Each structure stands twice: as C-alpha cells, then as structure tokens.
Figure (cartoon, rainbow, N blue to C red):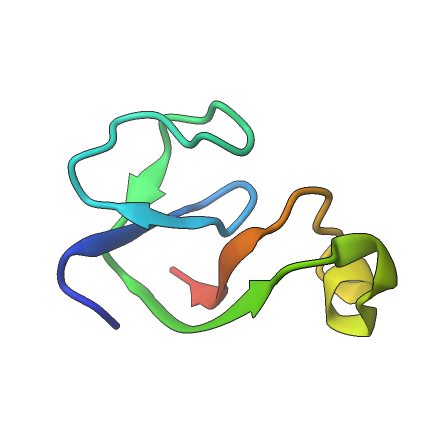
Amino acid sequence: MASNRVACRDCHAVIEADEEICPICNSTSLTEDWSGYVSIAHPEESEIGREMEVKKPGSYALKVR
C-alpha cells in the first residue's frame, strides 16, 4: 500500500490522498486501509476489468477494508 494514496470503498479506485471525492464514482467514502492494485487501461477488453466491474480506465485496489 502506498502511503500517499487512498482507495474508494465503493468502486476501489486508487487516488491521491489529497482528493476528497472519488473521480470515478463521486463517492466520499475513502480509506487508507487497502492492499494490492491493478492498472486497467481498457476495461471493456480486460477479463479482470469485467470481473471487478470496472467501467473507466485507472488503478483499482484489489482489497479494500
């Protein structure tokens, strides 16, 4: 886990710690307690993207607590 990033509890997007709203889903439910991440460039073509139900390109946490 990178200490300068947080993850959205709703969509699992990994974003900079100074952001207060998730740019992917507009949630304010952010946490520093996450582990592992994957970067998805083409979610519509990615098996992992489909499994995680990712709609927009970006970095996503694998586990969010």
